[in-house]
Image (tube, rainbow, N blue to C red; front, side, top):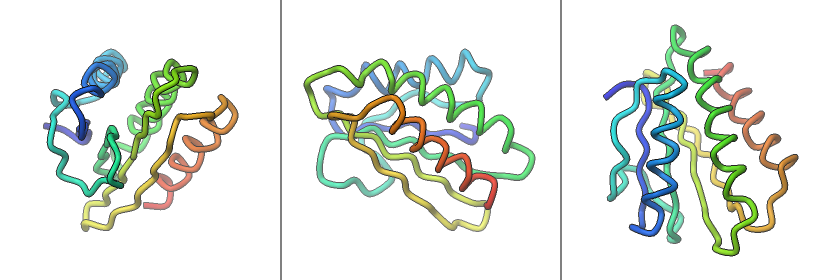
Length: 125
């Protein structure tokens, strides 16, 4: 399956999850198809969960993928529905760091800060 897994907890999010998968494929990342029924715990609301297995060799690809995800999420900022996403970074030894976000009322600057925080965490794993 690769180092990326995209899942969604509600069928209404399938188009957005598939959009993320398509953009990650276009960016050259190894990602399987979007799947309903996430492996990761959710926060009780419909959300897209993107799990990334972080390895030293893959860090540059992961950073490019996170920027791709930022681009896809930007397209959903103006929607009225409260879409949520969660990025889970998982190290080779199983340590996980979770980054949840709600897109409702979020601006581009705040989304960039969110992705910058994830990228900084990738560098530390």
